[in-house]
Image (cartoon, rainbow, N blue to C red):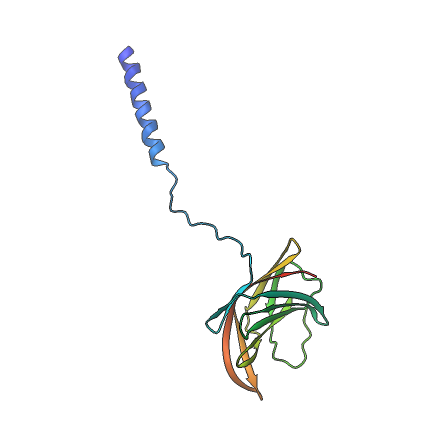
Amino acid sequence: MKTKISLLTTILLVSILLLSGSCRKSDNVAPVPAAPTASQWTFDGVTYNPEKSLSSAVSLGTSLRCNGSGQASIDVVFGSSPLATGTYSVVNGAKNSIKLAPNECVIQVSATLGNYFSSGVPGNVVTVNISGGKATVSIDKVTLVIMRSGQLIDTQNISGTMICAIQ
């Protein structure tokens, strides 16, 4: 009887050891990306790290501007004021007169070749998060165009993050 209990105890301990080793957590877990702490965007193959970011109220709503190193700057004008957390559709900014809905925005990049405007490609959006008195604007592959006399001169995509203090 004592041998059976000892044998059962041994089997139980071995089973526990085997099971505990087989339930080990994998060390191959991808790290969670950190939230961006500074503005940075890529346009025409060049990555910009702006020295200054501004926000201001404009007649259309709220304007955010980042002045990049070198010749490029980016402006995003939103149809809402004050700016709120959410997703905004990027509409055609090359039109002469623009009336933005509260959930819309336009993007303009001033570069060496000239001023690029958002083209209004369906599905182009920016995401805004308001926290701690700052607006973080995430831009993912939004199509911009430069037009002269009604002719398409160039098309580029812009991706990145703008972080601006809200005034």
